[in-house]
Image (cartoon, rainbow, N blue to C red; front, side):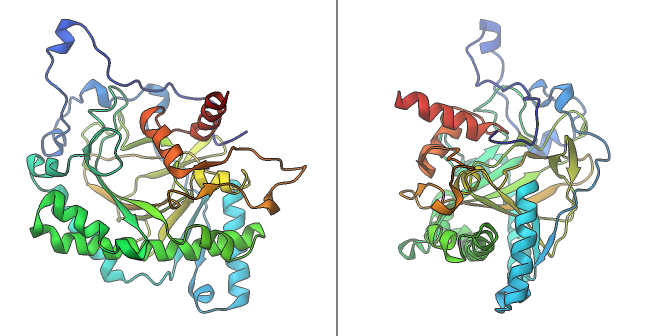
Amino acid sequence: MAIDCITNVPSMPHPPKHGTKEEKEEEPLVFDASLLRHQHHLPKQFIWPDEEKPCLNPPELVVPLIDLRGFLSGDPFAAMEASRLVGEACRKHGFFLVVNHGIDSRLISDAHRFMDDFFELPLSQKQGAQRKPGEPCGYASSFTGRFSSKLPWKETLSFQFSANKHSQNLVKDYLCQKMGHEFEQFGMVYQEYCQAMSDLSLVIMELLGMSLGVGRTCFREFFDENNSIMRLNYYPPCQKPDLTLGTGPHCDPTSLTILHQDKVGGLQVYVDNEWHSISPNFNAFVVNVGDTFMALSNGRYKSCLHRAVVNSQTTRKSLAFFLCPRDDKVVTPPSELVDHVSPRMYPDFTWPMFHEFTQKHYRADMNTLKQFTDWVQRNKS
């Protein structure tokens, strides 16, 4: 089974459809956080089905805290212990924390501060960077233009990062182009942050390679010139937090996610048939395996279902770096991970193929990789 985190598949939301004349004349839904954060009556599009609504006081998920200090300093015993803990977590649910990671605390604080500056702008100004349908980059106020139900209670700003030496200013140039040259410092902060996340992800790839027995360099080299996605998540307060979700249940289609939470809780992971919370730790990054790495590991490591909940009092922010391979890299597991006991689980694919599937054919959930595999096989026949 491709993903074994949950057995009951919730109904999929559908893209907006042409309705009656009365429906067509309705005002288009706009997620303006400055207004909606005070409303006690939620638009129906943000109200989730009863079986998917947030649960009160979920238990805390026990996740290993990986101290990278010894590994980064070349201590072989620390490296073995770190890889062991990472392997245990990835076989069970794919989530772990890293501390002593070497990322400048001032850079992390600046990234959170500039996020406040952007999302507190008037809606009309944020829409200068409006995300276009089918594209991974830009500003999105919920998914009001893409889906008509089960909408997330959040705003996002997404942009691409390339580790290619010829694209060293990709993030800064994109943000300045969209928002104006007064955003140059804004762009420089996130350019630097993305580079730091790319470097950290390669360190984590070394640990993943060691834990799977394919060596430190196998996955590091595969992702060395990554084309990744950075997303700023902004969850405003909601006066009816028990009715909605900040982000719906899904497994990340990307390879690896490195998340930095602020001090407001909200991340939940589905393990052993129930939701668990992961408390914020401002000194740590939350790391989780995505569907693409699950395929790269031939299903040995799990991409697990998770979501974000909101609250009625305080805005929650998070910084999410989604590691993706270079566009021409073929996702195929190392030969050491394929044998008669563990035959190939997924077809070869490239990240652009998989990403297009999640943008145009399927809304990411716990079955994305299985649905993509079926889609590839149908298109081959």
